[in-house]
View (cartoon, rainbow, N blue to C red):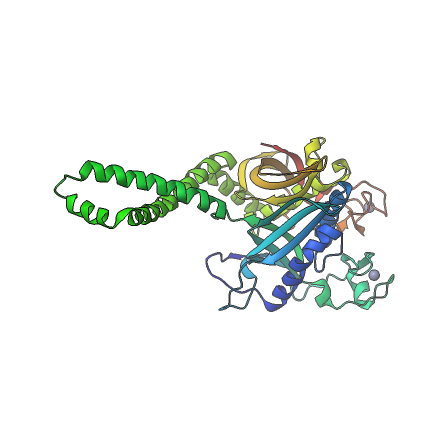
Length: 428
Ligand SMILES: [Zn+2]
Ligand SMILES: [Zn+2]
């Protein structure tokens, strides 16, 4: 396990290739419902839910991922920022500077459009060499039928397509876009002139107060000789510095408020330490990805009570209007408790939310609070997938995304046996 956020280490070429195909196909998967290459089954399922939501609103979403910068010195789009592994699987987080262009249309009428200057984090998971997941269930990338990996390598029994291991692994198991909170053009075009005027007024007051002062009198006389244009340039220059300073001050203030609001670093550290006792490879980045993916699944689902990963009350109606949801920073751990062999963790975070209600589009930035629960008596499966469940009663393997009950003994399967479930999500 390791982190390297401060160095730009290009990700492996084979991972780079898959991430490029994945991100460039993302728009068509969300907007048109096309199959996404190299995504694992859970992720494909969530993207399908999102597409169905868009369709149900009778609108179209044009969604395009573009590369914001191409670093010429390193001819790479994605960088290796973090990794973790267990006995069978190894995961890497790839980071890229990507943006998203979105356009909501109804017929040819454009209801909304924007360009988001995002960064991208995608988790790529590979099998550890020597382990053979032959019996793992994988959806045939061509026809969508459930098959074992061994069957797909011999040729899918339904459509006949034969796959190499390289087509199936490594695969992308989760992703999120993230707004870096950079200075926007709007902020510069409004903030800078205001600061310039303030500086110009300041300079004028200063000059009138000190024009007879022996220290400043000469300088003021010199400056006034250059006339009003020079005075304006001076105002704009000082204004720019003032603007940068105010921007920084505002950012620091916001960070302090956010930390109070989202949870403290101390509670996060306690949580990590506790989870590492159960599973030494546990990392907060893994948990963040898990949390975002469970939240997306619940938000995009038609009926959340049908989901194995959601065990809470009925979601508020406004969640059913969301057509695009993105993590927007500072996923903090508010609190965690331990009781009767279960750990419950409450997170708080900003989200960027695009909603459609009665053909009106709104873009908001709410804070959501979400609570997750899992057992403490079994290790965390960092690469858990709903498509490879072992029935806790009889041991048969099956795909829990398609069957809630074990096909062999008929017992209803509960996700909490193996993985995290979302027990509450609400606007904070
Ligand atoms: Zn097939
Ligand atoms: Zn069974």
